[in-house]
Image (cartoon, rainbow, N blue to C red; front, side, top):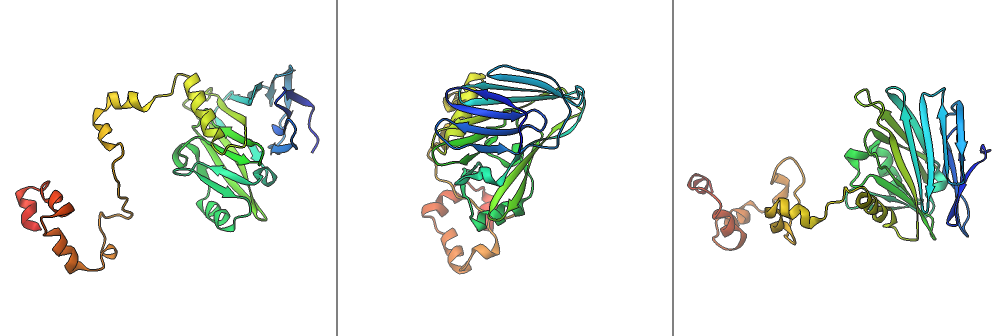
Length: 281
């Protein structure tokens, strides 16, 4: 794929950027290049301005304004729109998956490249709403000696779509500029991390601190003192629509005997019931 020759680089890495499609080819120092994004549908480019660490330009006669700034290990991208609408912004090819995907589902997961079970699961989930489906607005790829991490610094109105090619997965990213705030910029960062699967999460925390948006747990507890009782507390997770379903009980007689006991958990539960509830038991 031919790039338009826009290059941003420092001692840590080199980034070849195509202003027409926003394709990104990154080469960390002493490592092989990675096609981080193969680019989206071509747009008409105008007013391209470039320095060694920054580039800005327009798409489609000013319908969109884009900028890319390289700062140490971060490539910051920003896109603003003239009016409401949707825009494809990234196309992460299957080749960028490397050794595996760092995926912030629930507590976070590592998806090894070529794992059929994971691939089928993710494809069945369909499109991903970053604010709804992610525990953190980021994801990363493990390239062995380094990681590449996408941080959605404006996490709202972004959707990810999976594509499969053989036993590897690719991702496309689409942003919606809403009618309520069409001028709100789409912002994200591509962070070059070391061989640390938590590099993206650590950089996102650091970014929150830099923005004055990081709130330590101690501050949260000062606002909600009762929450301190939850620290270290044991939890039981029950799945389904009911607290206890028929399929959860194998011996009803034994359950009734346990609940009528005054010992252990049953005794503690009874202490929380009023007289009317006690008569039911």
